[in-house]
Length: 211
Image (cartoon, rainbow, N blue to C red; front, side):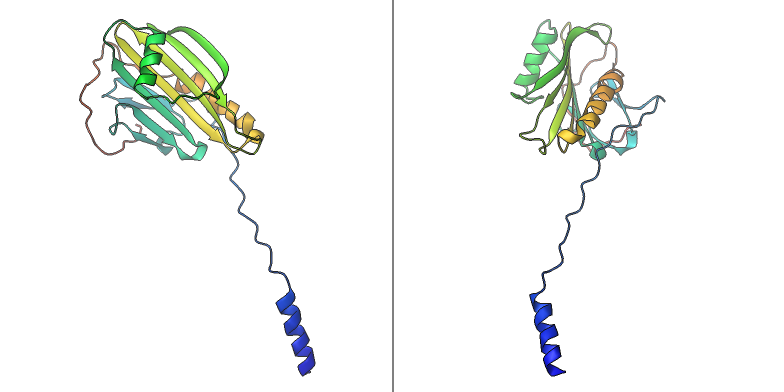
């Protein structure tokens, strides 16, 4: 009996530890396919109204810097918006150059444009709109998409950058759906208040929520 117990103990010690599987990553999700009007966040400071899907899930910082930043954790999405005055008359090219000079948008050397068009937006703004992706180093590396707009009218610029990320190439259809949504409904629904004056002093306060 004692010998049998010794054998059982040795067998137990020599057995491999059970494999522990890593938790599965949550599936990439698109924005809700809902035709109803979106909730809008109005920034009195920047004189604009920003439409957002799944409105109250966004965290909005409209006070920490010159730009407005909105983030959506579920889709790993981010919107950057800025409006500012220029010293002279501006169009899309001048406003894009000023946006880079002010570091409102990052230099993205690997950016691959899917759409690059110019025309009037917000009724009067000469605007360049770019939809593009930044591919990962491999199929299992994160893939980032952008919808960007640079618009100028008289002495005023606006800059818009929507960015969103998925885990890899397998989620590219979801990334494409988010970009199409952002192009049509977020950027497409953006409203700049007419004849508004952009404040030069930036107040500091807590993060805000859309209403």
